[in-house]
Image (cartoon, rainbow, N blue to C red; front, side, top):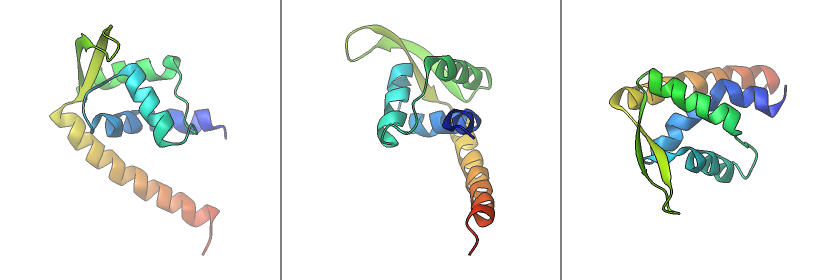
Length: 108
């Protein structure tokens, strides 16, 4: 399975985790994930922005316009209360799933 396919299933959770550190614009979210994973996860705009819009529609993030560090107008996303709750719940579920898969792939 390609990294892109694995990323697609976890991108929403990774975005929520990224925004836990504070509001970011889309490019900032992508750069954070790339830097944090030593460029293992390269998030394309075609995946990132639909995920941000999806999270916004679900009420997990909210967006507002502001100025980027380059003084350009950018949409900044931040977690809502519901987003923080979803982050906790989904992180727990993902870690349980990953542990189960690991038991199969790497038997003791």
